[in-house]
Image 1 (spheres, each protein chain N blue to C red):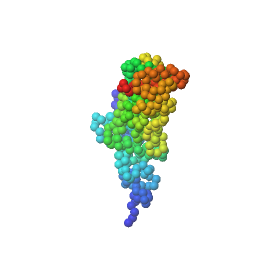
Image 2 (image 1 turned 90 degrees about the vertical axis):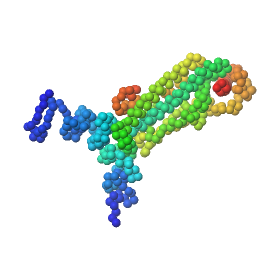
Image 3 (image 1 turned 90 degrees about the horizontal axis):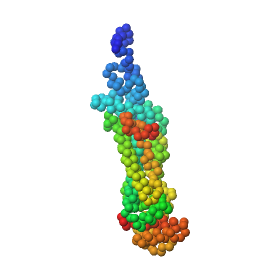
Length: 306
Length: 164
């Protein structure tokens, strides 16, 4: 290591250069001042990253940074500087929202994750009960249920879910409306959003989940937005529109081709007869009635067994 | 009685919080006036203490006029966070939220795996059909955030998918 003392320099008679390799830190370079040995900012602003200090200087300023460093414990200075640098970089990248925009986006993601988790757990509970139900009731309902599923798979499952979720999901669903100041990137959620369904706490209709953006403050896309769930009526769910949740099975309209009894759902014989009636009549018409009756019987058997 | 110079901006408008704090005349074209009303003195006090009035003024001049209100609100938020926590400021909240999102993602993955298992079992048992996926995009959220404050790679689940 060669140490030279430049005495002949008239401007800096006492300047010392260590091996010709020491460099002023980015902070001192930016301010065009001499970087002393104990420069407080030198450890945090290396000379090869001038942009980092420029961002920090732009947002905080040197004096404010030094003020913050003086307030913090020596062991926490590094953490404080890292947070300042991070905040400054985010402000440089997002001049309008800065870190608050990131927080809003994370809050939004958290809300969506909670919603999805809640939904998946509900669906999981339904599947578990369905499996258990099929195990426990090998007679009457299973064959009809399977028949119903095989003939109209999606609708049967959704009706089952509707009934189950109405009882299980009253307090859970619908309470996940986004709070104020949500993510400004809600568009991404709209692109990747759930196309699934859940039950609103106020009614039993299965509705798809949608997100409606609100602008926070003024009409600025970059502003933090408030996200709310905008529930729309479903498409392709004819059964829900035709049938209410069967709290009182006496109110279920009775309509089959060949069975004239009114309260067949309340007995196993009724279930079996409905199964028999499923094979009577024309193909299309019988399939529709079979589906509805089988679902009714399945629901009734489920409620009776549960 | 001579009128106070601080009220010369308008005979009916009081000076904004910024000019009140800085004890200067609030001009009609004061850049702070629309965003720092006199009813919220703490808002400007925090922002000035953390960032400085000149820095805020420069930042406001760099954004479009219709974006300034949001910029001021975000600065006020960050200033207040820094006042409460001088070490981490609002970055602490970001770290906490990222950890929560990752934890939820793991839980979601596990629950989805259970769901698929049950759906597969019921498929094999009775119907002979494939598993039902009611939620089409379950578990497909991109929870990775490239804005990890401390470069912790465990916060990044997938790369190359910036959210912002």
